[in-house]
Structure formats: structure tokens, C-alpha cells
Length: 285
Image (cartoon, rainbow, N blue to C red; front, side, top):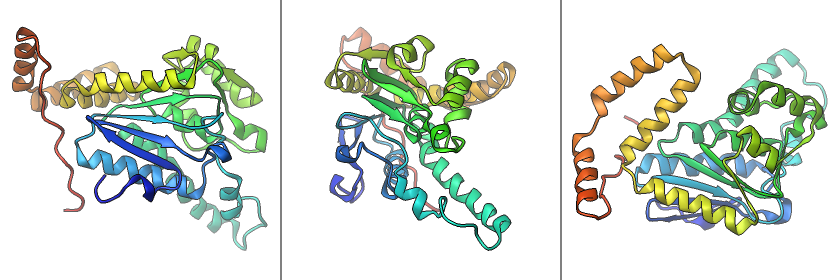
């Protein structure tokens, strides 16, 4: 990742191999709670991978008993959320809106990334970790995993992405029940509702499957994969007619005959196809 190494991060270990980036949360002793460093590091890592173009899929996993306990309490204290009343609460509220939007961007970059993002979840996926999970393309879980919209249990409304995304993933009635009560959603029920794609017996098995899926995705043409992600996300937020029109525009510019020819040739020759990576994106002008 540029000139950076995994040791540059306090919350993540980053490994890249054969077009697959594996981001692993490494603060197991603190249940991988989301410190201020987490909110800085995740978008820096993802945006860097996105710009480089050589990574074709991202896997996010964790360590320890729980995937993540959500927002670290120190972040609330540092931002003065639990402190006294500001001198001018209206001016302070406008500034705080921008802080929230910055936190939202931490997970929105996953949704916007050119490559698919796969999450492997074990144990508790709590509070901000649910926001985190809903921004990914594919979710797998262990049998002991569970999801909690924890914000209601600490006196606030979830605000970093859970509601706008979760309502597109599971029935609205379930979103409301979980949001209003703070109850746990067990992995098996999450599977039934479609929040996760599969459930595995162990942490090792869920991570292995996530990596296997990522490698399979990495074997496809990156241009078609990123096009599929763009159109699927667009379809979620637009009408059928609008999406069909956008898809026609997309294909008119990015339908790649040479990539299709390589797919046909590789199949006929019984070999793995070779596709070009996405082009790097240069920062600035």
C-alpha cells in the first residue's frame, strides 16, 4: 500500500496477496472497539487501495471473541458529547453535523470502493460495527455471531449508516424492532433475513470462506466486477427505468470486447483468463 506497511496502523493489519487485500482488526483485548485511530485508518486504507487499482477484492475480518464492540467510549468523551452545554448550542450543532458526516464517510468509502468488500463476522457485531457491516457488499458470520443496534441502549439514535442501509437489506419491521429494543439478532436469524449470506461453525472457517470468495472474484475481469457493483448500488437507490438508462450509458462506454474475447479464449484453451487491473486513480488534478 504505497509506502505504508501494516505496522503503520494501530487498529488494522493489512495483507495484500494475488489481488486480494485482507484487513484485520487487531485490538482483540479491547473487543476491537472503534477508537479515534480506527475512524482515521479505515478510510485511509480503503481509499489508498481503491486509488491503486491493483486490488480486486477486500476481505475484512477481526480477532478475538468479538468482531467489534462498536464506538469506543473515549470517542464520545473526546468529542464532548457527554460533557456540558456549549456556549452557543446552535453553532455547536452545525459543527457537530460535520463531525457526524465525517464518521459516516468512514464506512461510505467501502460502498463507493471500486472493488467488492466482504466481511467475516464472529461474536458480537455491536453498535458502530453494524454500520460497518451494512456498508460491505457481502457478509458471512459464525454461528455464535450476533448483531445489536446498541445506540438505543446508550440513549442515542444510530447515525453512521445503519438505518439507510439496513432498511435495504432486511424487512423494515425487523429494523424497527432491533432499533427500538436493542435486542440481539442471532446469526441464524440474520441468515434467514438475508443480512448474512452464510453461517459457519468457526472463526477460521468464516475467514477462509471470505478469502476464497474474494479470490474467486479476483479471477474475474475487474472492469465487469466494478461495473456490476456500480449498477447494483445504483439500482438500490433508483427506479428500474433510471437504472436501465444508466446501464445503457455505462455499457456504451465500458463494454470491453477484448475482455470478453479473453474469457472465451481461456475457456476454449482450458486455462485461467488474464485481465488488466483497474487503472490507478491519481490524486489531485
